[in-house]
Image (cartoon, rainbow, N blue to C red; front, side, top):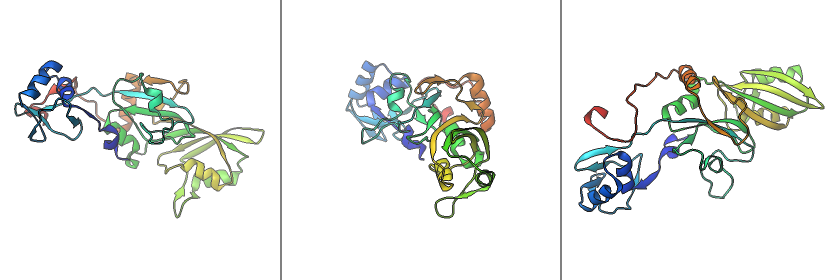
Length: 268
């Protein structure tokens, strides 16, 4: 997944100048009218000119202007039936429907849960943290509760641990699998994955003739879903975030984070 495609968004030029802290909205209009604003080296005098926050270079009186935003971290318990995307051209339900009017900041989902899966989904605007969670190099353990049809034999459990052949030559395996309950022909298991392909859990059980009836992600590294109900959102607590960053080997940032500001040579 290309994180930049999640993070990029556009705003009107006058709004960008206001958010940067350089001027009020009225003063921003005046700066643009006076032709003191450039976008990518070209003077722009259109108040409603759209700028790409991530890619365009904005200058006021020859000095670069940038947005600085506080990093935010949320947990969403994604219910079944929602796409893990911020928009859908076919009008299907997406996680945007769940976070609308609940999260003010621009955020993106870290990784994916397919439409029929549920559980822990991290929403943030911190690209570094998101990349570390998703990159196989860091081996982030994800745990899932899975309810399947049928009963697993010892041989099948062994195969799920050691490797099941999926699409082509790809071999899928769980880091661990624990059988939690067997009742009326339905088995509930706890499985762990550090690196997974699209719909891997469903494909692994399907290869053994088992159908996944329900799939819930309950943790990512040390971060747990807890008692959050489907559709609910909450901020990640300071202690939780500290443990997650330690797990991901992200150094704590300095205290120079803040709101929008004008850039200077020390920021380069």
